[in-house]
Image 1 (tube, rainbow, N blue to C red):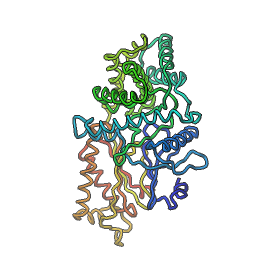
Image 2: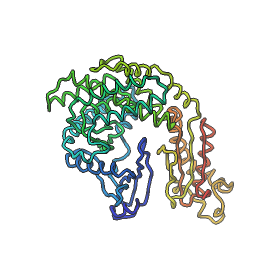
Image 3: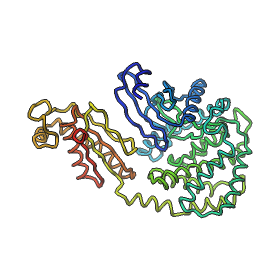
Image 4: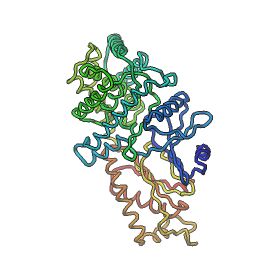
Length: 471
């Protein structure tokens, strides 16, 4: 990874930071040199990578804001790409929710409208792409749809103990597939066009994770965006954005809006079922809390559609199964299990900057790194060479120092804010790292003090590691 960076950048890689990949099997890292930086992605699925490389180049030529692929290694499993920052449309929305009761205000709503404009651009220009490069299939056809519905059946219905008649369900699934298969596939289908895959940088929107794109219908991507479960978009805003999409589409082709809207809700339910299959596998099977908690807003969306919309197709047994799902207490009980746990573990590390930042082994990808090198350094004095920040003589060196107290006061304030928020939202892991030159005095002392502070003030687990001493 560092070798590929040096070949591309013409300078050494000075820092490697692992990033959270959420539900993806790909691994991401942020690489930094003296003047250049980028992301690195590692994915053993070469066919998926080739689709990403092709679409990146294709859409860049069409004027779509996608990341530039800088370099690819010989085996095609490692590549460097443009660093678009850390702020997604979803992150921006969650930030708004903290400070306002109406997060879909003018700014966020305008960003969603711009996302819709870009989506239509991608759909119309992307339909001329070479779908021989698509992964895993060139078209969203009956096979693709059946994969999604089987994912829902085996990874959600079975795992959530929702009763169904196998043959009656299969009959409805075949009718469902036949209906969708009868619609025109006249569009590039992005496949996962949702708020977490839209980056916001310098007030511009950028688009990622399109490697699953293929030829398909227009409805699916719009359903993915407007019915993204965790975004919890109000139904009035959804209708406003659906109308906005149809108004623009009508400028490019003949459109019966009433028919399109009926078709749209079929795809909303398909998208919800596909997502619930993922939530079931990642949450109910693998036990990942984030995915279990995603089921509840998805069920809320499903319930609203069942109560307010009429589908243009008869699916009697599937309708009965949907109703059983929204009436089931199984998911609520699973969430209660998480709620009854002491959910938060705060991991506090001291380390040496000579060895680089500590790895986050939880997959959370969040937390803090505090640089203690500006603090007074006992290591400069011979009497402290063979002791650490845990020893009394070093503690005495620091305890009456106003500069150290001021530094720790700021640390307590910022870390406390996250601890309180993590406890409210039932997050499971937070990592805090203190670094200094040798990882022996300043970082150890500060890590010890924060561990005491968190233990005394919050009901959570604290894990303390002094990495240089443990080595």
